[in-house]
Amino acid sequence: MLDISPPIAVVFILYLVALIVVGVWVTKRNQTLSDYILGGRNLSSAQAGLSAGTSDMSGWLLLAFPGAVYVAGLGATWIAIGLAVGTYLNWRLVAPRIRTYTERADNSLSLSAYLESRFEDSTRILRFVSALVTLVFFTVYVASGFVAVILLFESLVGDHAVAASAAVLVVVVVYTGFGGFHAVSRTHVVQSALMVFALLALPLGGLVVIGGFGGLTERINRESTDLLSLTTGDGYLDGQWGPGATLGLIGIVSGLAWGLGYPGQPHILSRFMAIRNPALIPDARRIGTTWVVTVLLGATFIGLLGIAVLDYPLKKPETVFIVVTEALTAPWLTALVLTAALAAIISTADSQLLVSATALTEDFYRSYLNRKAGDRLLVMVARGMVVLVAIVAYVLALSSSGSIVEIVSYAWAGFGAAFGPVILLSLFWPRMSWLGALAGIVTGSVTVLTWQYIDPFDSGIYEMVPGWILATIAAVLFGRIGTPPQQNWTGRFGDSTSKDAPQPVPRFVRPGKPTPAPWPGGFGKR
Image 1: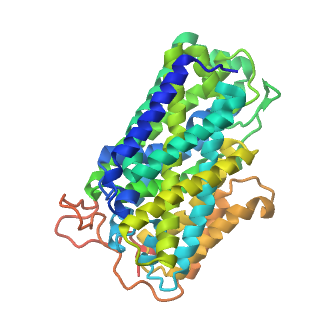
Image 2: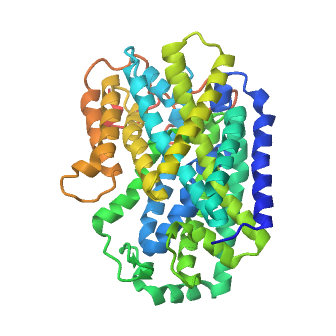
Image 3: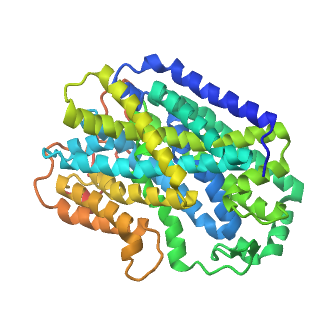
């Protein structure tokens, strides 16, 4: 067990106190619900790119993913490849339109509100169902963050892990509750820097210690040559590596399918919605994609270093980041690197808490209980919802027996399958009706929830794949039923009117020429 040291205690405490200070400092900026939830749509390109990345890469990045690489070697990196490609395509295809369309759709503050306005759903069923799905999967997702916090502190303080993690819970609730989106987006910039530092410094230092890439390869091959193959999977059993099972098409597709989840993640899409102007999105895309690729590479090398550096097998592979940090760094550097792990966990949990509070406040409280509520009351309600969701998620975390990667993959698939196809179709298919959106959300979420019981071939494929396919089919089939929205949703990517900055023009549109259908042929036609 890694004993808690004064450097770790000092750095952790300073970091947590700094979060509270930021939250209290920006409290006065939250005059309206839009300020509290989306920061008044005023993110810079750097803030948007880094905040989207840190909201995405939770404690999964520094704990679960290196643990997966430690167990399976490079065969686990198909997930990273899928995430890197998905990040870029999400910025490229979704970000410009979701920023523009959520503003055009009655300045929607949540995905549920956007979908109701976009599909002109007077029944309000679409809003209710989408908000409910958001709450269900986000409660599970936030719980995964607290599972990661407990795992981190179990390695640091042993039996006191629950008390230490409860203290972190209080800090997250305080600075998120007081500061809202302003606090979350500002702290994400610092947290992203911490994560990059840890995921570059640790692998580089480790490579120096073991003699570079040649030394790394030699040591890993001593355990199993399959660990450096992209086509073999888990060969780790009882602390020993053996011949890995061939991944096959199912394993590779399941890994790459993580990239399909991006268009359906509300906590990431909210960063697109909050950027100051669509003209800033190309720069944000470059910053965000570069950051994601960098940290995924660093996390991969940490998992490999665990195989090469450690003299004993780990009973809990998800602690490989913590153990390698202790083995390779001096006390104060250890404290800084481990703070990055805490930052990774917190930077996702705060975003998810805020989106969950939005669903409860905007989509339930104001929509069904108090439609005349003013901004001051709504902000107070949202703060109360942050506290409520955090407590429920923490209780779930205490009772959870699943690994971090299992919980995260489940929640990620839930959002990806439920919202991913519907969001894409809403942005590129003007003809789609509200019934198609409802069918897609219900089909995707139900498939993910039940797939382990109904998998007809016992294939073991990631729930995201059948969920995405079935949700798309349902959305397209039912989307042709009923009257399409009357408003024209085929405007240019940068067709926003709220800011003074110039609007971008799609590269395939020549100046002075009419804008073509957003997706030539197929779904782009009415």
